Length: 351
Image (cartoon, rainbow, N blue to C red; front, side):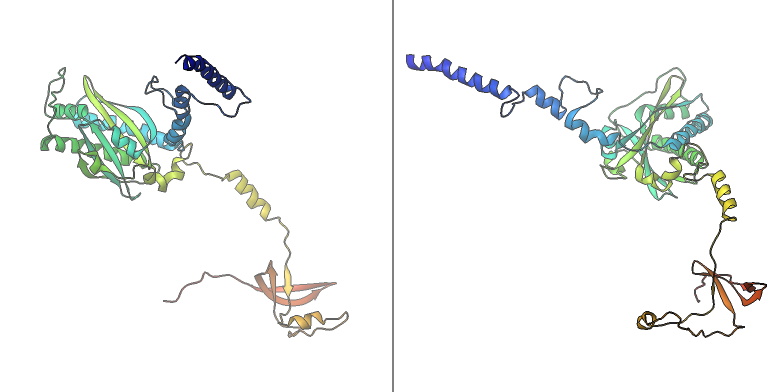
């Protein structure tokens, strides 16, 4: 036992030297501790949920914010907020204020997992875009709308009964409100492009409201509806696939912007084209010969043309026929008298 006790410090000392050599820059490899591994992977148990992520986890989640910004879409939703404020005031006969809280990009699957339940999900269809979108109305707004429309007194919070499904009356009243909002969305998109939004169905289970693949990107717009001491949030989700047909319009910085076009440059180009010099060829005759005959041409050889002196000739520019006429002479110059122009007519398929 005494021999073992004497050799143990030697083994510990040798192991310590090996670790120091590995830690040195010239060592063979460096062993990472657990904190460094967590930092590399982006997992930090102390960090808050709202803090920025780093490492491999940040690379994986970078798709959440890597999608392009659509400036015109922000203007459309600003217009929607103004229209909803007026429409919901007329709908509820109450003082309603609608505000735009946030507009961001998110994966569709992540959004479905983050929906706070209970809630009503309205799937709507964009007719001209031939795709779908999603409305989410949280429970606070549902009970507030029901309370306002059924004559609830002001100053009292809407009574909530958790753990039960929404009744037919509640669903009907919320459906009427959604139809008002969809009508406002149609008006908001109208200056940009004609898009008709129609309600497709109401769901309470997010699984039944899947309108895109979980990994697909979507735009999430959070709207806040306040009715004095009552209100709640409405969330609008539009997949990028739905907006793809009008993506070029949404990329505009202002209404009517034309990409790659400048009217001043177009007018200048059209003016300068009239003074452009072009080469015109007068074709007297065309013949088909073999390559052997062409290679046997000699200097001074006479080529016979199948054209009489009064035969019509054709003027071409870059191989395109322009006019037909007759050849003649004006003073010391050889001239062509134009008889008629050639107008190319569009090809019409036979019936």
